[in-house]
Amino acid sequence: MIGPRFTTYLSVFGTLAWLASATLASSAHAASYQIFVSNEHAGTVTIIDGSDLKVIDTIPVGKRPRGIHASPDGKTVYVALSGTPIEGPPALDAQGNPILKKNQKNDDDDEEAKADKSADGIGVVDVATRKLVRKISAGSDPEEFAVSADGSRLYVSNEDTKTASAINLATGKVSNIIPVGGEPEGVGVTPDGKEFYVTCETGGEVFAIDTTHYQIVGHLTVPVRPRSVDFLPNGTLAFIPSETYGKLNVIDMVGHKALAAIDLPAGSRPMRVRVAPDGKRVYVSDGRAGSVTVIDAHTYLVLATIKVGKRPWGIVLSPDGKYLFAANGPSNDVSVVDLATNKEISRIQAGEGPWGITIVPTSH
Image (cartoon, rainbow, N blue to C red; front, top):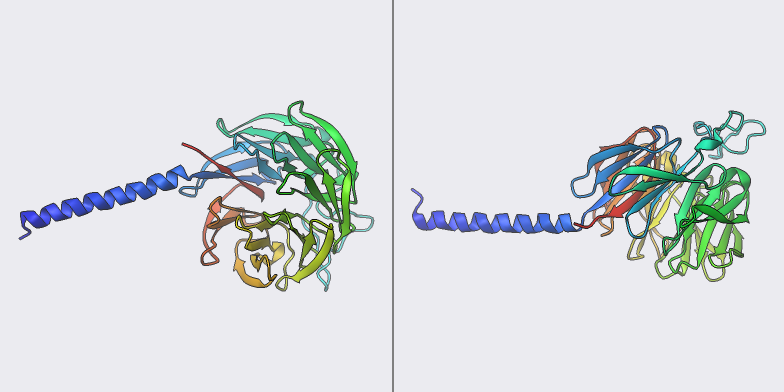
């Protein structure tokens, strides 16, 4: 028989356990965030609760949503929209290079099809109401962009006009247009906010543009089809993946010159690069390889290759640096990766063709 003293002990122990559990839950809730995923084929954005990794909403935004980023204050999410029809990825030759049709310049867009230019723009999503509230004109066929450090401007790559554009969010108008190279794609703002980089697929050109006068202050070349860019927090190095050659380029941000090219695992067709908040690791989505590569940001050694879903494109890290989320286009889901073990621990169903992914911290 259980005595009164032991019963009291169990009661106290249970209360303490409940309090500990409640404290952890409260802490997790306080540190909560949401994950926004752009679904290119579905024309929607999926919203996932970071505390329990459940889908909490799916909202229509317009045609072909791709690049997606949150404002610094977390109140707004911007998403690039395009009326240019989708074409599947090209076949690859024996060297892994895309086999393009005659006279075809862009393997992602069907240039012969009639594009709906009225659908082009940057969609503005209100985080609180989870609704698309307006669309900003951003030039032709916007694919990727970045938000300025102070949240007042967007820097957009306009793929079919060989330009980058700066948008004043207060007026909703393009304030500056900067000619760059062929098929500009990736855009990233430096940690100090003084420059933004634009990567151009066709010739592998990379441009650094100052955010005050919109002048080109750096110009270099990397192997072709550089898809994205991210930076060390201290502003010394940039990392740019070259899809065709399966490499990650290391860039000296002061001299605007290439320092090294890291070979990624066989079969990698790198798309998106993310640097960990502490600057110690670099993560690259490997596209067709169905994996994410982990690299030491200082020795450039490949530390791990993590299997995820099919053709991961967009990746993002949780604010605490514990998890990585990968948008897997053909498998219509989002991989959840535990970065302590470098293992995929879960998959979350998204919309059709998830492409981009961003984190929005939430306060309660």
